[in-house]
Image (tube, rainbow, N blue to C red; front, side, top):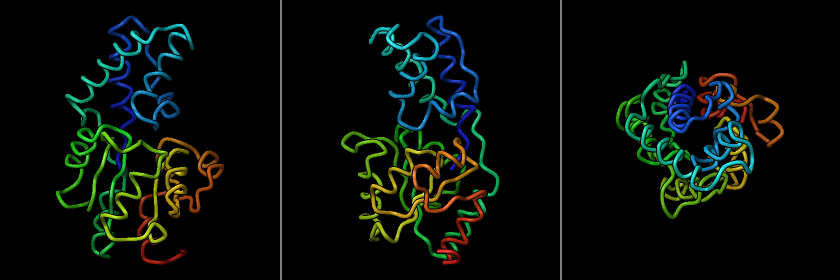
Length: 212
């Protein structure tokens, strides 16, 4: 829903610097993120320290600082994707139920969505929460479908990573890979995206039944 790459890079590198590690180029974070903050920090340390060259305590320290920094200012350096706000408004006009599901902590997700979109833009908005396995588990996606009173086969799951495509497929939903996000066409196709979208406006066409 939003380009968080600069935010992630800023807070991640700030946490690394705190403990004397080198920074990671912002573009590299495209392939580091997507599976939750714990996995992300492990991947960061694998790059800057080397796999097996840091302790669990090292991980915990970087993870704690990263979480504290990001959690205190989750909208810093946030960039909206061009056309996304208009797309969400168009979906609402069509009466399409919409939701957000993220592996970021729930409080961060709600802060980001509230910052970018008017209240009520989405019917559900969930980040990572206790008791709900993170993506690619389909649990969160299926929970949203139940709460919205729709079957998985009626849902279109849109995302920009292999994790998203695996989540949607595991939930029994059609999947659409978003090329405006963090990963490329090849990754999305290799993970069986049903549709490949080049810009957010194409979501409206699919929702209206054109091409489905």
